[in-house]
Image 1: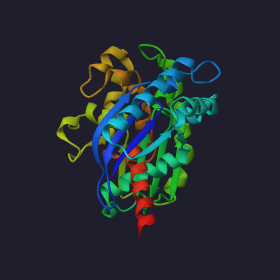
Image 2 (image 1 turned 135 degrees about the vertical axis):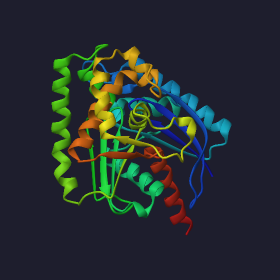
Image 3 (image 1 turned 45 degrees about the vertical axis):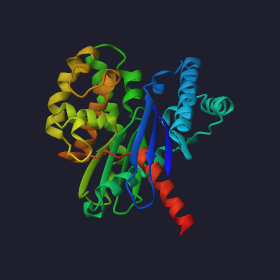
Image 4 (image 1 turned 45 degrees about the horizontal axis):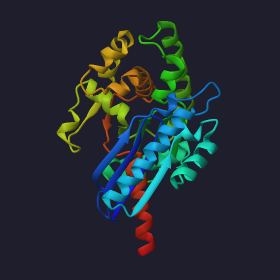
Length: 312
């Protein structure tokens, strides 16, 4: 079956075409994406701007054309925190449906965490024991921990790299006082859920997902994307901590020249590093394995499970 996953995220709108069937790993066949950064296209009232809505509708319309061209038979469209939390989120969903015919499923933060955890569990398998997964998106930080395919605890915190950058670090070079305030804010938010995760027991395997973590790992010495999905990649706390003060002193243009950092994500890199550093510190993690699968793969796997149950 050829599936199309339309992921309307806070940073990127990504349409991924995959060949998939129950019992097998989904194989990417085609990728169509644009960095719209919806989390940054908000007006003073917290609504997605008209320009942002038009960009979104245009990207969805082009994704529909790609789906037709590539022979997609099942389309899975969903949206995360940027649409979920926008003051005009309902109006945006209606505009999208009226103008494209696509009804976006808006995931809650907990659903994001649970579906990402499912993908991580399937990637690393049962031998990982109790898994802890961290995922930094544009709008939120997802945390999930558990022994099974469904986590025993799942949280979503408003600590996305795009959100924090827009609200706290708008300048080319970070203001030291605002940086300290942001660091305190991040750590207070994460500390609020540490105890609930700790009650489950220490994780046997700590994992990170998302583009932000991949870029942080690459920045600290992990293999480049060209090396393939199966290469082991890790982010160490020591490596990350050494980079945070360097990032704090860099301009956005200087960050963009770091190997593995895309120009579109360079501005958000410092906020993402602060969140990652705080999470690793507060959860007592010396390193995180980077998982190439995340929310999109979780959506696909859940769909395949549903189909298998219906046909079984």
